[in-house]
Image (cartoon, rainbow, N blue to C red; front, side):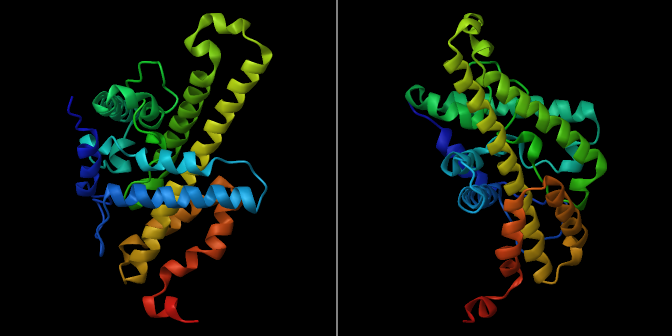
Length: 267
């Protein structure tokens, strides 16, 4: 049977981001997904090797590659539009959930188990209409209004819902009522998996924000003041995360994004 799954995934290179802003360099969802994968892998390794954490950087990178996969059907909807009011946000979440279901249905059956957690995180074995993409609630769209109080509040609420959903789905009772009597070791393992999933979502959110911040730096270094306010708002959003890995990255790596090729080549 012929599968169109990867043919659609490759079409993410045609979906443009930052549609409300004047850009000196266009960015597609495919580019963004790749960049977020690089960033979340780096953040996890900073956490592991600098701060002594135990994060699965490879899994986080895989999550990032698919976190906006549904946009091949929905397009990149600017955050101010999505978060205009709760009813509109709920409608978009439902559309994203349907798009994720459609994508998963295209995956050949022998491979579906591998891709379900990436397309429908925290929803394995459930009916995920409305769950949306991997980090549906954590997107940073291309506009200066992306971090408005209304958008931030809605995103925070949706992020908590996503974390709760992931935790519930990782719990034995979520899929099998008889699991309540499972061994303590199995319950502890499920709880640990739920905690790990929540933690990786936090790092994925941070990477998503970082990519927006680095986009702002790149545009500003090209003389495009359109991104001045967006940079300040994204800096504030990153600070609110209170993640030392983010601060480490901003101190040691982010400044290079404002340099020219000649400056980067200097010894």
